[in-house]
Length: 93
Image (cartoon, rainbow, N blue to C red; front, side, top):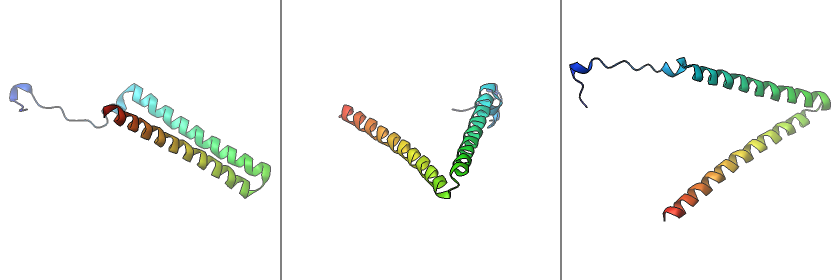
């Protein structure tokens, strides 16, 4: 594609233009507040466990349980994707 003088100057690309849209601003603000809320909830839960038990081991076990549950969710998503790709390749054969 060639540009001619009759088309006028090409507008300069603004990389932050999307951040000026109201919907993107609302989405970003919601994400920040949700992340903050989840972080505070995790801290309060850990504090409660330690306050009730007084044991660092119990606190560590709660952390381990949270990690293992996140790991199983991650593994489940990976297996679903693998099954979907396998089914797709079976259909195209």
